[in-house]
Length: 301
Image (cartoon, rainbow, N blue to C red; front, side, top):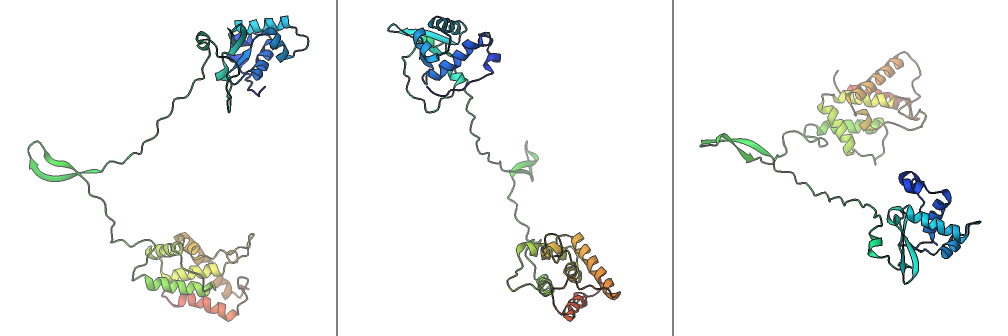
């Protein structure tokens, strides 16, 4: 006896099965558990009576139930050497047998096998073939010729990289001194360790601002704006420091925002308000030197 699948929807999808009485439907599912992995089962009423074990049902009533299943087209009975067997006609469509064993009972005749409903199998999907892009074509002017007109189709040459535009993360010879100046100032202002390095991401952001017309003096002022911002120095809910050079130079709006923060800090200093919450314990003279050096090395905006 094996575990089988019971499909309640069969009562709605198969009108003949739905017309059967509940005890006959229950006998149908019970007998499927006693069938072999090919959907075959002994069909003698005395043998089936022992398999079902329904209380209050005698062999006579069990024989009537078997004939009702045959008339409803759920099973097909056959004999082999005088012994009665039956095969479930919807076995393959209703059951999925894992690790099927060899049939215990003999094969039904060919005319009975043809009555079995086979499970509809999905057609295999064709494997997708790699699509090779066709060579691009372009119109190239040629000398006038008969029946060709002024143009003809020719294979377009492969595009080559333009060497005139500077690469995104590589400074030119003119930009290298500016990059070194900003890097040295940033290291000093943010008190970075010797292990800090100018990564590709930071270099690309810095070069993008320099090439967009932002001066070195303004980038220094933005660095100081981040340096004097309590939030970016760790006075926030997460206690994290947001002072990366890539963040400062991420966009022109970021640079402008940090510059305004630094200008507000200078105005606060002129009014005599305390502005040393952002310090990391360094002497005030060192902090003031950093503030003044931010704008002293360059001209005005």
